[in-house]
Amino acid sequence: MSSVPDPVQPPQNPDIKIWRYMDFAKFVSLLDSQSLFFSRSDLLGDSFEFSYPKANYNAFSGTPQSENNDFFLWVSRIFAKELFVSCWVMNEYESTAMWGLYTKSDEGIAIQTTYGRLRDGLRDCPHKNRLDIGMVNYVNYDVDRINDQNILQFIFHKRLQFAHERELRAVIWLTSTDAPFIVYDPETVKEPENAPTGLAVPIKPQELIEKISISPRAPSWFGQLVESIIKRFGINCPVIQSSLADSPLR
Image (cartoon, rainbow, N blue to C red):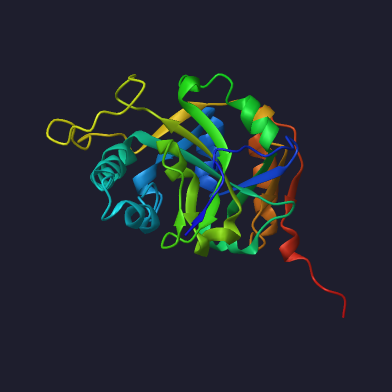
């Protein structure tokens, strides 16, 4: 059994480039609403989000601390609907895999910023005292035990199969209690029935966005449209077509 470091670790370099890929409609929504969307953790598309690792479970099984397993399984069900996540890709350049995963049409957008801009852009977040930004650690849930002294550590881990994403995430935990510790009470504390699907967190796009890349499959007119749109919102940044559209020398 192996251990992993404390996962709530932001990048040491504030200038490290991060990317977010989206369809054009979501991009316009970001500009128009002046907000960044944080998705509820159980709606991110991976059933292992905020889950309790098998390695942790096995470590307690058959020991006097085995009741911890009931607690952590309960936690993973209850609080998954109180955690909201904004996902970014840490890369110097664009990722062809991310274009395919996160844009459903030829009119896709990748906004490029830096960790420092994101951190500073969230300084007016109304939930700032519940906000954490950190790099995701990729582990084998069967053999790697996650440090369970901080419940948030579970949301900053993913399976090794997702390591290509090199993800940085901002996480808001809208816990229903301000108590310094969680009291195990499965009889009265149930999963929230009407939890919102996400949070719109105020940001200033003109300060956040450093560069805009458009899909390598986008037609030529699409870049002109994007330039026109961002000017209306007072954003002055380069708009380029993805270098994946470049042609090699023959």
